[in-house]
Image (cartoon, rainbow, N blue to C red; front, side):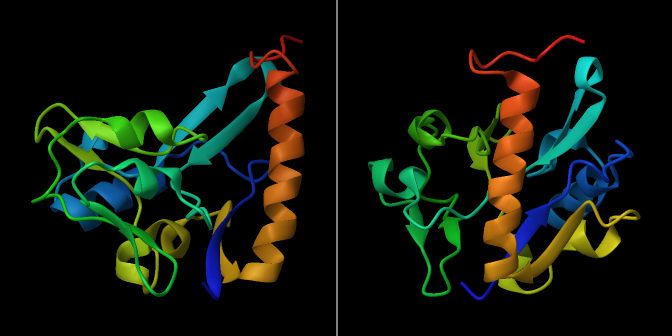
Length: 163
């Protein structure tokens, strides 16, 4: 994949524009439940983190799907054919980052597919550039930085650090 989403939580102001734009792009409504991105706000650490599929190189969500509803396209984007999805939620449980969601309304999964691989709307409309669509080399460095920031936020035990 030549371009990836890059998250900059230090710039996120928690406006949730990414959630609104994603929901509208996916389902033509503004229901947060239809968004493949969610903003997690950690007040104790004074940080907001937009969370969506990071398009893992070896996507566990793809490898665990028992019916082949999930696959990795030639461009590296992990995709889901919701008409094949049986709602087993194995992909939800397999994602190490928790970036695959399940819709109780449609009984199908919701995950980011980079708006069809073209121009992710969350990045296009983020007013503070907390989400950008950029070259892979840049994104890899930022992913490592993001991992370090999240480790500081959650600490070694996986819980938010109070402070």
